[in-house]
Amino acid sequence: MNRQNVDLGKGPVGKLLFSLALPTITSQIVNMLYNLVDRVYIGHMTPVDTVGKLALTGVGVCLPIILVISAFAALIGMGGAPRASIQEGRGDPRGAERIMGNAFTMLVLASLVLTVVFQLFAEPLLLTFGASGNTIGYALDYLRIYTLGTLFVQLTLGMNAYITAQGFTTVSMKTILIGAGLNIVLDPLFIFMLGMGVRGAALATILSQAVSALWVLRFLTGPRTKWRLRRENLRPRAKVVLPCLALGLAPFIMQSTESLISICFNSSLLKYGDDTAVGAMTVLVSIMQLSMMPLQGLTQGCQPIVSYNYGARNPQRVRDAFRCLLRACFLYSMTLWLLVELMPQAFAGIFTPSPELRAYAARALRIYMAANGIFGIQIACQQTFIALGNAKAALFLAILRKIILLIPLIYILPHFFADKVFAVFLAEPVADLLAVCTTAAMFAVRFKKSMAELEESPGQ
Image (spheres, rainbow, N blue to C red):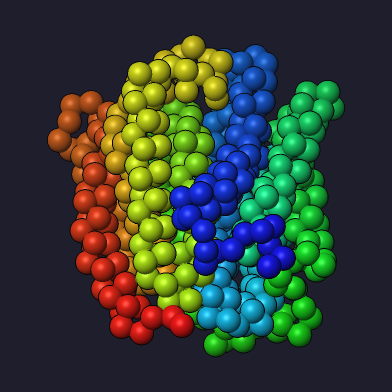
């Protein structure tokens, strides 16, 4: 197989998982550097306690829109890639190519619509997301440039999923490394040396994403790819697109609702606290995103194994892959939780040199990530549902944690605590605890049923 000697249907599952997961973990961590590096440099703009602090908060309120852009890439990329892997497992690589070609067109169309919408409505959206009179200028400067590169973000994130799904995880890792490395070099050049400030950070990011997008397209039209991007597959067809969008709704909601949640958190914190509380939330979200990257990398590395073997009707290999994934995710999340609880100041200090903001964020971090230790169970089960093509279960769990639990808790808990800002931060761990318990119970029942169905008609 022309797949870097990766055979998803044979060999020890644990070894295969970690050979695929290591590049995807690296990709996830490095991908976050696009925005995290921006925030680190912006937070160090001088004077730190005025310009740097306000600029960091301003860029922080852009995060919901950035997440919406990434969410549409997940809707189309992560919704289609598992289905493409399942088609290959069934012995239909041309079906996988049709899915990928349709996805490319949908990503381009989504990019055009998102660019127009965010250019036209940037200011009212940012004010809704928690920007104040002190921070709106910085937020607008960043967002209006960043959204011009929406097409590059969509193609990089969305189409890279199809490289990973083929088993070329090292290639997909290089996609992210190229862009992030360029971003790290360009950020200080544009922000400080050319004096562009937050506009320079945004420009560096979109130029870097453009280079990554070109790398992805070059690979998917080149000789090494197993699924080739062909002109005849670019015309969207409902019977191809709709099942992919249905499966992609879960990751879409997981990412896009971060915008809604940011509105809820920021508005509540602004009501009960001040700009420092909102700035602390930017730090907390940055830490949470960075810490979750290895978990997402593990699940992305496992997805081709689960999807391929599910399509090939090999239930025992699917079980082995899930169990290995669950152990790895749980061990990581528990280790991370312990480090955060022991060293919150160290984590907060990554994103701000301001002593006031660092101390505030450190206190909030211990509350905000109090249930993080068991979150590995949640993501392992939820992402396995997606890999199996179980759109309904994945969608319900995505809605449960964010919309049914977390958002109401943000507004309910302050009524029961004297320290209302503390109560707002407490909503996150309470929602996580309830979601993990529900997810584990639901997965135990549904997964057993799915494997029993495969065993009734095993692959040949």
